[in-house]
Amino acid sequence: MSAVMTAEAPVAEGRRIGEVILDLQGISLSFGGVKALTNISFNVREHEIRSIIGPNGAGKSSMLNVINGVYHPQEGQIHFHGSRRQKMDPHQAAAQGIARTFQNIALFKGMSVLDNIMTGRSLKMKCGLLRHALYWGPAQREEIAHRRKVEEIIDFLEIQSIRKTPVGRLPYGLQKRVELGRALAAEPSMLLLDEPMAGMNVEEKQDMCRFILDVNDQFGTTIVLIEHDMGVVMDISDRVVVLDYGKKIGDGTPDEVKNNPDVIAAYLGASH
Image (cartoon, rainbow, N blue to C red; front, side):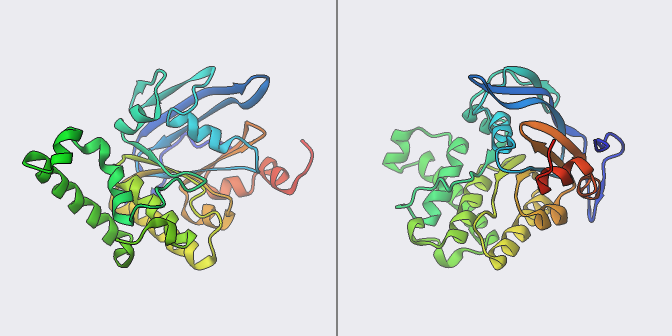
């Protein structure tokens, strides 16, 4: 088994990794008689990029779904910013500063890029639906302020030229970038990315890596990432946790993980 990092947090170039803000202890999740996760424990530190890797069916997406409240584990505890989290839904998780993207793109295909990203501001809006429908007074001022924030995200992601284009007409790589923009519109303190580079070509992956690093560096956003491209994972991660058949088999720095015999066996298909 690999050595779990419990000592001083690593220092990334130009930034300092903070204290633990998410702590998962003994998480177990079952669907009927099928165990998706078994006694999984790991933590996430402020400002770090924390990757979750493993072969198909390892339980990675199930773990993200536990973190943002889609699934409620039968066993274990979750502490976020020092407070124990009871059962919560994704809306409550978003209100606490947790946003995510999905393995399968979940955008409004008939809506423009700008309007899709604008939906990510819904939790920030204070005026009611009726006031926004009338587009008058406080509602008008609020929408102008939110649109200004969305335009900043559009500039950050370098998608100004497609801001009015319906999302369904965009190539896959740009749709993934728009989905990232919608998550950023919520101004999360923690961003969960479920295979953000799946299906991309090399150039699209390079762009997405750059944006992920910039989000982490410029916004100070903590990132929890699922990704199958091991080159990407080893290049951008501060720490990596490895799952296989719903169990944790490795946890540590990229160098520690890639030299872990249990991890090597899992990826080479050796018997357990």
